[in-house]
Length: 182
Image (cartoon, rainbow, N blue to C red; front, side, top):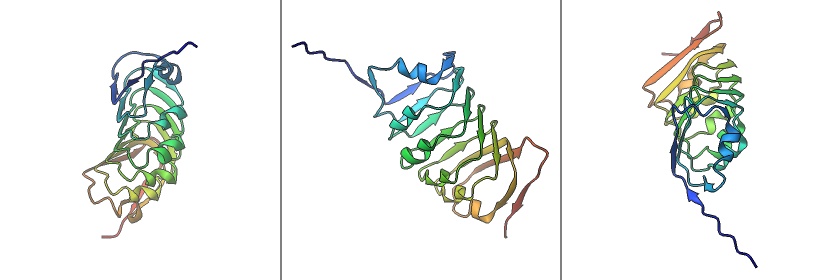
């Protein structure tokens, strides 16, 4: 009987920011087949030249606190696993300067520990969900330069008592209406 022991490396934090990795993210992640990501708390793959949709395998990082993927070429909608699998751990979500599109789902409000959210410089469209108002830990919110439309009401901000930074604009020539009560 042959016993094979594989060396498993546990990675708690991985930052490969500003490395021109190029290619698909699934292909990149497959290079870490001997590593265990289940204890990972921080993943920074910003400015790496990665392309494609975010793979569902990222949903296995159930204790992930910081997901920083800005300035790549990720596209598609925000995967639902971010809102379900990472709802009780994620504190930082930076998907800025990519090609994400579509509306932001109402399930955004499930990210109960979120402190910083940056979705700027993408192709998101539609209304900003009112569930944003459930993110009571939010300190920084950047929704700048997307294709938003519709109204922002008191419900969007009602529980954002810790919010210190807020940016929103639209890439389209349509107004964003603030309908707030004093």
